[in-house]
Image 1 (cartoon, helix red, strand yellow):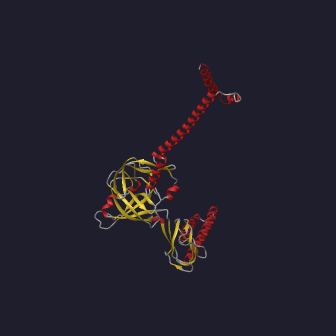
Image 2 (cartoon, helix red, strand yellow):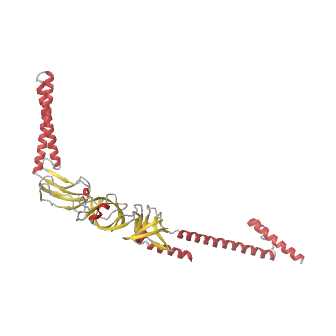
Image 3 (cartoon, helix red, strand yellow):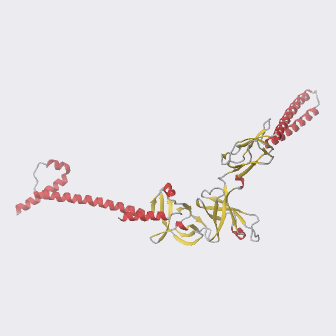
Length: 409
C-alpha cells in the first residue's frame, strides 16, 4: 500500500512538472514511459483547461449579448438617412411655444421681389425670343431681341449729344489758349466753358434715356433682360410680333425665395404680430415659420379676412403654389415644447421619441402633456434643439422590439 501511494504521489508530481515545463518539457519527456496515474491526471487537467476555454467563450458571448442588449436598451437604432427616407420616416424639428392652436389654411407664394413681369421699355417688333417657359436664367440675361424705331431715335440723340459735347469741349480748350495769349478776351473763354458744361449735361441725359430703353444699337436693336435670377414661368410674345411700350415680354420667378400666405379671422390680428411662431405642414413634412407681417387693413373691427405672411425656417418650404396648413400658437408659455403627435411612441409603458443622432436614432424618454391640432406638448425630456422622427416613427419602435427579441434568444 505504501508503495502504491508513493507511485501515485510520483504520478501527480510528474503531471505538475509537465504542466510547468510547457512545450519544451513535453518534448524532452516524449519518449519516456508515463504511469497510468499520470496519464489520468494529465487527462483531467486537459479537461479542466477545455472547460475553462469553453467557459471563457461562453462568458464572452454572454458579455457581448449583454452589451448588445444594453445598447438596445438605450434605444439606439442604426439607420442611415437614405434608409430612413426609403422607409418613409420623416424628420421634424421640436417646436417651441405652448398654449392653444388655431389651424389656418394657406399657400406658398413667391415673395414680392422674387417675381418679375419683364416689359418692353419701348415699342417695337420682336425679332427673336431667347428663352422658353421652365428655363432657368441669371440676372441680366436677355429674354428677347426687339427692333424699335423709337429706340433708334434715342440712340441717335445720344450720339448727337455726345458729339456736341466733344465739340464744345474742344472749343473751350482753344478759347482758353487764346485767352492766355491775349488774342481773345477772358470772357469768351468763360462763355465757351459754360457751353461745354451744358453740352456735357445734355449728352449725359441722352445716354441715360438710351440706357433706360435697353441700350439700343445704332440700328435700333435692343435686348429685353431679366432683372432677377430665376425660372421663366411664361413668355407673352413670339418672333415677328409687336410689343407696345410697357407690354409684358415674359414673367420670371425665383423659386428659392418664397413665403407663406394664410387667411385668418380678423380677431387673430393682435396675436399674429411679426415674430410670432407658427407650425406648418406641407407636402414635404412639418417645419417652423415666423410671422413677418399682417395685412394693414386687418383688425378686430374689420369684417374682412386677415392676411398673415410668414417666412419658413429650418427646412425647405414646398414649391410656390403648394397648399399648406399652419398652426398659430395663441397664449400659453412661450418657451413650451411640442412635437407631432405621431412622433410619440409607447415603449414598455413609457412615452418616448426617437431623436436623430449620428448613425441613426436614439429613444429618449419624455413626459407628454396636452394634445391639440396633431401636436403633443412635451413637459420634460427634450431641450428643443433635437430633430426627431415623426411620420412612421412606429417603424423604429418595431425595429427596437425586434432587436430586443433577437438578443433574448
